[in-house]
Length: 449
Image (cartoon, rainbow, N blue to C red; front, top):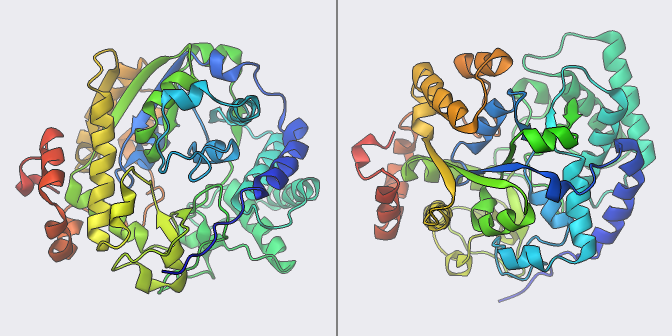
């Protein structure tokens, strides 16, 4: 079998130097961020299980703190992604938190502190431009993006938007319009940036149709996984916020890092919000995602032979998508539906294993209850708000009652959509997967909507 070398991790040094230039523009970091967080709520869920939607709804509450996106980029910047972590998978334990080298702990604290916060009512132009430049550099780490020049490029685009205030496409925010203008300018300079790698409404990606036969990864070395997020107007958390407001952490791979996160925030009350979805629907969503032109997570040293995936695009053989569970090596040549079932099962088994600790404060929410009807969604969020100790009022209440546009979705959620692939999915639900489903309360297959 031939091998293909993984991009050298020394590229991380160049990336850090670029990001360091932006630090003074992004503002000071809260000192001792990791020790200052008073409460952490981990949204634990399998990939394609609905965590993006739940996290986005929770971002409407002013009583919670969030990161603008997932935590994987912070870990990769600190050398804690696969394969640099040397755990063989996405797993990290409390021992890895205890043994963090000073530089890695500093990177985690600094980057998390500058990202933790909540959506701002009014935009701080300087912060938005610096934050958008930071995220563009993280999203395109191999491109020669000069930090200060990039900030000014963003600033010009933002001021143009503010001055003209054109009527955007439906669902197109000021930040999305600004980003598209920046990408257009960078593309005009010959840089291979592509709006199709972003989580933007279809209307905002006008002129960039989704590729019919896949699209290669946006680079050989990735820090943020596509679909990339759009930086938004953001109010950074201060010391009082960290003390008083729960920090919601959302990344499916964190199912294998719960002990690590518990140790990383040593003073925080630690809680787990377990979001479940029946295996057939989740496997169907994972299947879509593996065949989507995003969700590239890990570049592999040896080519994959996953049937139903690698033949779609020649570059696919080098990319594992979504989370990388322990034991993934046994599935590098399996049919795609089996890989998806393995990912679903592994995530929930890891969460259930952690929840056997009676000291863990936990709540379980079913994705089906959130999507079946507005009444079900409202009732679920009323219970969730009570558990979190927050009020369901204002923008948060309106978002829960009226719903939001699909977030990081390959298709609009629809009950029983998995039935269109039943001949692939049902055989992949083996005995081990069915046992996990039963433990989660999905023993009756007739109710797998």
